Length: 223
Length: 206
Image 1 (tube, each protein chain N blue to C red):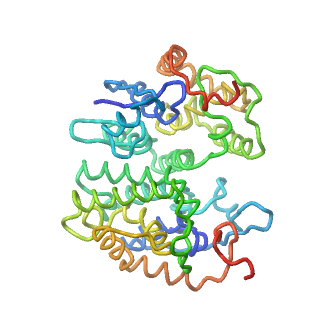
Image 2: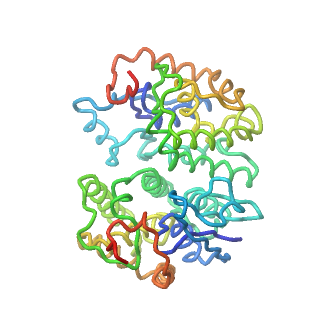
Image 3: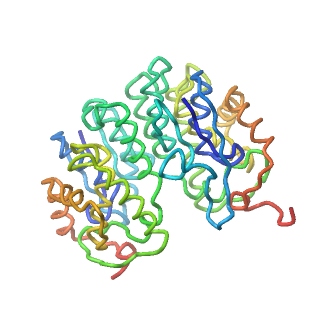
């Protein structure tokens, strides 16, 4: 089984299934491809041999590509039921699915004005009106889940689940842009950053030297 | 069960679970909240704090977002995904690709069931989305993407309506015909045509 990812510093979609599998102890081979901006558009060098959608991440399982982070997470949850990647409780599971799907199709303000950039610090940058609304909604989700489902542990649904993997890149963003957090949300953010899988991903990101202009709206121009 | 949806003319996200439930024969009450009217937002927030349609309420359980609702339904109605696990993974991939992607198609060819805008909205980016979708549809295993109607088809149903509105030609026209022939789809189109509300910002080309 392989998980094909992009740059660890930038690729928030790649981080999700990678952290999910790593944290759950599902063995996989990592295949890293790098973003390329040579022709104007952002492409992924070497992705053609994995799938036709042309995007990372990709899961290769039984020789077949599964693409898109959410489809990969659902597929992993189904193939490794003993890992309980979704909450076991039916009603908690629906909330977990709903917030992951909400993340998957939404929060475009935050995603565009606060791109994930693990090795950088841009406190105060990117806070547009829409991004503020997106952030408030994320904080509402975290607070509600921690209060309603999180009493048995440090994660959104007590123990680690797809939902935490899904919000891990958001934790990275809040860290890079120094978004102010309530005590409940700060504790959650710290718990995510303390996960072994997340620390490993961050270490990998810090070692990367590639610079992708599209994902660097706040970098000084003279680098 | 209760499904909260937006305008049938405009709300592509609403069509997805609505169609899946109709095709599966799952009984539900429909609450239609016309969008962008005074009080619309508040009414939606009364059902879900995410503030967006569609929303499914089943007893105490509230599920929001089209794809999460389809997964919820599939727990009880597994036929929504292909029985073969490799096929199922592929169906989830194309569904998720639709869910998070095709932004330019959505922007330039927004769903507008009752309008006809042939040739409009064609930019290089929206046509790249069209080409990718055409490629996915051309590999359909039967009348629908994976043989019989499933969640992946529910996800692409609004795209069929878009292509109908914008006069987009595809290689596998039989896929669009199969979708448009579904009694539930005809019911949705007829209801959209009868809707009194219009949202001027979403009537992109007059």
